[in-house]
Length: 129
Image 1 (spheres, helix red, strand yellow):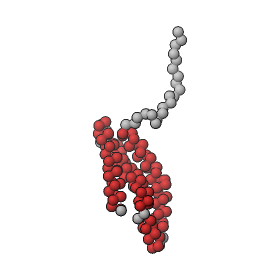
Image 2 (cartoon, one colour):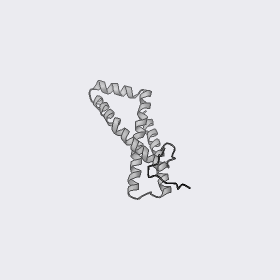
Image 3 (tube, helix red, strand yellow):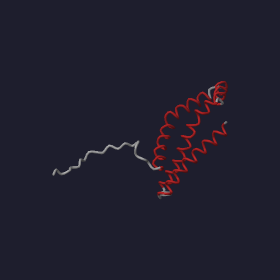
Image 4 (cartoon, helix red, strand yellow):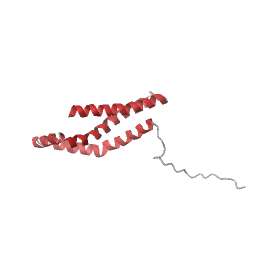
């Protein structure tokens, strides 16, 4: 009989087939929203502010464009990015202080990040329009 040898080569892991727990998903989305808020979020926001502060005509033009329903739909995802990132950031700060590190608490706080982020986005969207 031939003895079976094991290789030290790394194994291939298909991350799309692995079922991630909810806290891991929240952590991954927290990183993604942070990147999206940084770029293109900050440059786009700075361009809007530059136009906004340029003149009264540019302010009126921007204000008129923000009332467009399509523009409202375009603004909702960045709002959710912001609120999710803030809520997940607060969750991570609490975890760094060893608050909510037990498994059930971590799952509950991850679920709350999603719920609160969506609620804040909905409320802000309703208040803006």
